[in-house]
Image 1 (cartoon, rainbow, N blue to C red):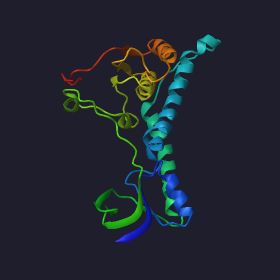
Image 2 (image 1 turned 90 degrees about the vertical axis):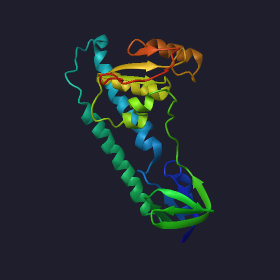
Image 3 (image 1 turned 180 degrees about the vertical axis):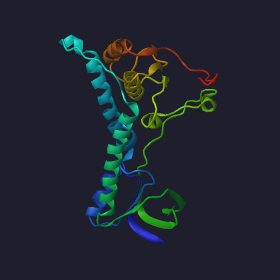
Image 4 (image 1 turned 45 degrees about the horizontal axis):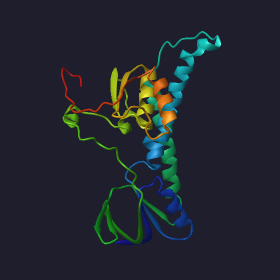
Length: 240
């Protein structure tokens, strides 16, 4: 069994405490089975904003006539767009991993960690322990208890950012900022998108005036079913 001063599980937001402790001279074990950089870098704000930028470029081209610029879109290569974003994200993640491996007092375990005793983890074939353990594993998408949803099949925002082929149509359950971003991107790529939300307006956590105006403008481009709850999902003739 190897003993450390600190174990940090998850290397997204956990990087601050891990680096700080290592620089202060403490021995630190970082446990992260996935790509380093956390949700924001790998499947959150950074890849989503890169894709949103592409969607905004498409929108600017569509609206260019307003500025007396006559242009048109002849093709959108969806797979290349996603591949390029993933390549850039993976490059950043690998750079972070190299940084961790080269940092003095820091040991990286690229395995899943399981608690097997008091302040003790089994990581792969190694058993490690520390007086202080920080849990920085992030969160997971919430799966609503809708009848037939799992049987019919669905994707979360994580998988949506990594689709290799553009779907012809998509239903987005939830009109928060993540759902709205995804809806905007896929709609601009040419997918027929419908947002379903039980609230009257999109972005319900924003100020009411902002939420109302956003919903008014957004609904001109994307079908929005408000005040609607999904009771059941089924699959018929290959469609959901």
